[in-house]
Structure formats: structure tokens, C-alpha cells
Length: 249
Image 1 (cartoon, rainbow, N blue to C red):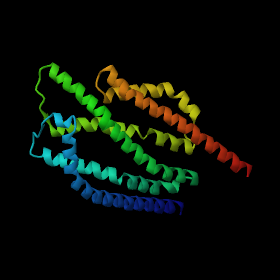
Image 2 (cartoon, one colour):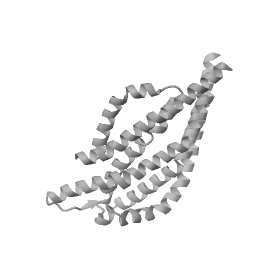
Image 3 (spheres, one colour):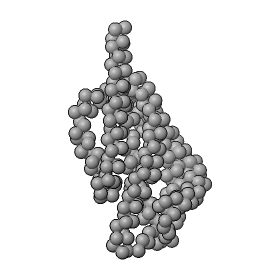
Image 4 (tube, one colour):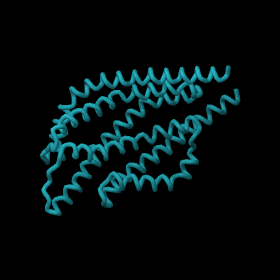
């Protein structure tokens, strides 16, 4: 009987997961309609501001234009539907969480979306122009002609912007893990030297190979980590006080 019950529970989880995946796909497809409408406007904007305005966008394949159009539309769709996607993921895992963990996960969903957008903005408006300017200077110093394909241009951009957008999720992740008792400020303090080493490696991978560029990426990442430690202390203090109050009651 126990094996039958476990099988039925597993099938119920699979059915629920399938339902939530379908819901996510429907919302993404609806958001894709918005993305298809906005994609030409976004592309026109990116082409009108530096560094896009300083170059000619070329296509080296009949599919490049369509691929970029669909890629931009998909990025817009995923960004618009991100809060709903996170909410559906929370809905799927909440049954395995304690009430405190459920509340924390749901509360941090909007913050996660805001941090992701902040990371996209920082990556595009700060790091990407700096990286493009560096590579452009190197190209000119070698007396080479800058002829870029639009696919290569956006590939270069996404390789910089997307990792930074993910890195900006660090404070929310730390707050959530502290809330559910996985992390503590003391542990984060002990991990600081290793965290800094990881941030140095990340900064060197997504920024031009020069000291100033590394610092311009590394310093914000360090600030993010220190903000995460500060938020962890606040959340940990509140969690400790709540547990003490519950024990006293």
C-alpha cells in the first residue's frame, strides 16, 4: 500500500508540474506577442544609442535578421513573464516548505524580478559600452576594419548582460536562504575571502582585460555581496527574535 501511495503521490506531482509548465508556456507565448510588437522599437532604440549608433549592423546570413528579431522578442517575453514564472515555481515547491519558508519565497518573488532588471540595466548601460569601447580600440590599434554582424553584436552583448543580471539576484538569494536557516551572517563572513576570489574570476570573464574595467565590474559585485551580508544580518536578527518569541510563548 505504501508503494502505491508513493506512486500516486509522484504521479500527482508530475501532473501538477506539467500543468504549471503549460501555464508558464501560455503566459510566455502571450508575452511573446508583446515582444514581437516591441522588438522593432527596441532594435531601433539600440541602434540609435552608442555603441549601436557608431557602427553599421550587417547580416551574414538570410536568417540573421529574423533570428535577432525573434531573440529580442523572446528576451522581452521572458522578462515580462519572469514574475509569473517565479510564482509558478513557488506554487510547485511550496508544499515541501514550512509556512515560514513559503511566506519568504513568495515575498521575495517581486524583489527577484526587480534585481534582475537592475542587473540588465547595469550590464547594458555600464559594462557593455565599456567592453565594446575597449574591443573597438584594440581593433583600430591593429588597423583592422570594424565590420560587425548583428548576430555577433548581440551575442557579445548577451554574454555580458545576462551573467550580470543573474549576479544581481545574489541579495535576494542570500535573504531567502537566511530566512529558512541555510545561511547565517557568520557563515557569509567566513566565506568572504572565497566569495571575493569568485567575484574576481567573474569580473575578469565578463569585462575587458584591463585593470580599470575589471575594477568597474568587480567593485559593484563586491558591493552586492556586502549588501547581501547586511541584509542577511537583518533577516537573521528578525528570524532569531521570532524564534525566541515563539519559544517563549
